[in-house]
Length: 112
Image 1: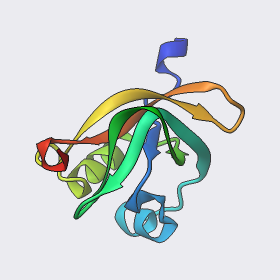
Image 2 (image 1 turned 135 degrees about the vertical axis):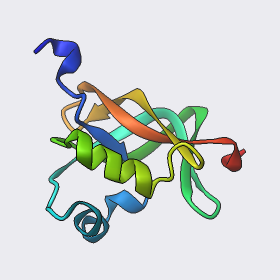
Image 3 (image 1 turned 45 degrees about the vertical axis):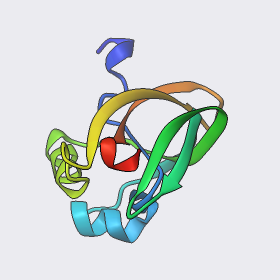
C-alpha cells in the first residue's frame, strides 16, 4: 500500500458523528477516534452542522479510522449524500501535529 492510500478508510467528523452512541447505532460497532483539527475552516449550524472555509479558523473534531466501504456507504446515507453533503478529501492535523488525509462531509448549497 502506498503512503497515499494509508488513510482512504479514515473520516474526519465534526458534528453528530462525534457521538459514540450515534456511530454505534449506525455502524453496529464501536469505532475508536483520534482527536484532530481542520485548519482554515469554521463550524456552523443551521438545521445540521457544517463547515465552511474561513482563513485563520479551525474546527476541532475526530478521525474515525478503519472504516470499510460498506460503513462509508452507511454514513453516506446518514449524511444524505449527495443532497445535503458531499464526501471529499481534506488534510487534517492529528494529535501529533501530523497531516492526515481523510474523507470529510462538506455541505451542499443549503449551508450558504
